Length: 275
Image (cartoon, rainbow, N blue to C red; front, side):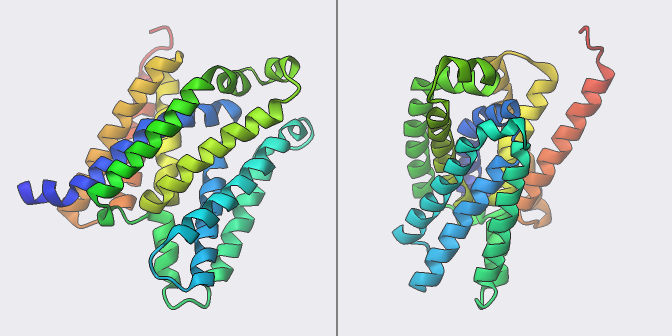
């Protein structure tokens, strides 16, 4: 058991670090009704890293991969921010879906002639948590502290745009620029997370805790703390199942999130709304 804790320790730690900020951002995503925006930004980040790997012919991601992933993510942030007013005519979720589909298709095209293309696609989807080191954990935690501090400073503006969009548009002429800032910060978080957790797991950390807590709670702060609890339980269950049954770690955690969500939905159906 001690050997398992030593081996899986960095993977569990990076999951908890990822959960620390993704649960909060996930509530914004649900409020904005752009559920798949994180998938689109994650896929754009993965596409940028893939393009950089193709151009530099490097097996391991270097600074070029991170820079290209960030560049592609910023492009996506601009698209989503400056098309927000078009939601009155075209669902923004449709735009998000189109960006995701195109980015996914281009990624497949880019890796189609790579000898490690299939493995690369697998890493994009479910990540490679077991390759995480404690150095990765501390660096990611430090980056999230900085990004979380910026989110905290700008929280009042971002919350208004997410939960009261019409009022925010009336109060500010530059709401698109504020929205762009939110998506850039959001994209930075996604760019960091996806290299360890993969697209499916990043999506789970963002959406599932936020969705479960919305079934039972209304206030932002209690939902955030409860969301952390959900993420901790799902991470622990997934990593335990991965160790016991030799499952891929990322996929096991995603399945654990699904099981926890199903259990929460059953409980919600059994508990009267008045309670």
